[in-house]
Amino acid sequence: MVLGGIAFRLSFLTFAPQVPLFPMLVQMPACMDAFAAGALLAYYHSRGFEKNPWLKWASLAAILSGYF
Image (cartoon, rainbow, N blue to C red; front, side, top):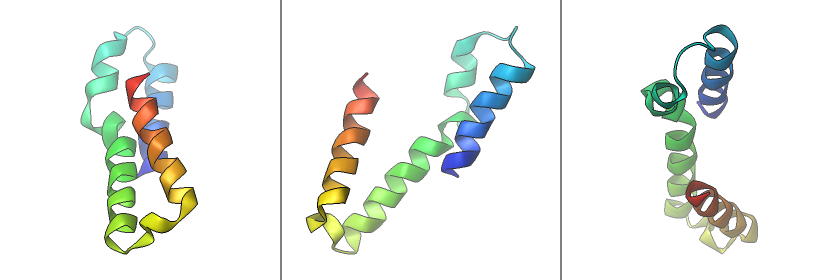
């Protein structure tokens, strides 16, 4: 799903450059990568992997990338 969201954005920019950018960013297929990444982090947290240093850094990067 993560790759699908990215592919949707890239194909939208490639095949429909005349369409405004804002609708492309808020359509549900374009947001699937964020939903999938959040679900993956929640799954790892529920399985007790929060002590994994990689997961902590990935979570921090995901939160910070949402602000910028």
